Image (cartoon, rainbow, N blue to C red; front, side):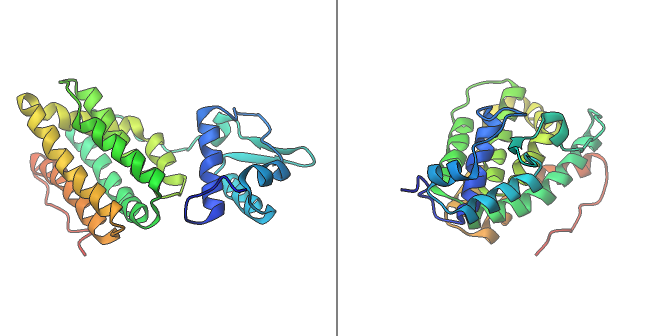
Amino acid sequence: MSIITQRGNLAEIVVARLAERIDSGLYPPGEKIPSSAQLCEEFGVSRTVIREALASLKVAGRVIARQGAGVYVTEKDARALNFEISRIDDIRSAMQILELRLGVEMQAVALAAQRRTPEALAEIARAFDHIETLDTNNAEIEARADFEFHLAIAKATRNPHFPRFLEAVMGEINLDLVLKHRQSGPASKAYLKKINREHAAILAAITQGDPKAAKQALAAHLEESLDRYRALLDEPAGSEGDD
């Protein structure tokens, strides 16, 4: 009997399960993963599904096939995403990161609305609830919780490149988030409520499977901060992304 009960492409689901095991360290770097026959039996799917899943993981750089020896988890250094942003702790740098986030996350939130599973929705909801119940004035803690909400959305795309990209530039994204939370100052609790109302709109659109509404909610959430940064730098607001 298959242990896979979610709806959706079976290969995508197997990819997500195996990627989770790699990320958690269950399959550490350099270790051989179970054979195709073992994976077929465990997941209750065909060899074609396993072959497609392993091919996806190879393309993503998560595993490597060794001739006659099997498939192994890629060493961390070998699969690291080569993406660097110079760290400048100022408004312009934060604005540039936010522009990048807007481009990537607009696509991610639309895919999340189309492909979300009950498990993915539960993870997004947990991240949402965590922010809502935060009782702290620590900008770093608030920023991390904010990031986890957006990371859960990226995972819901069932495309491993979205969460990998966000994690690869997490430090740079955190710069923008910490700046925003610090700027809220004494009104921190009111600010948290405001962003979570925006998060609620995003979560509702994803739950309803409405990609257009999800993109609009995300744009409303991120573009306000982007316009505020532009105003501080006396730069014109952009019109890109208007539908």
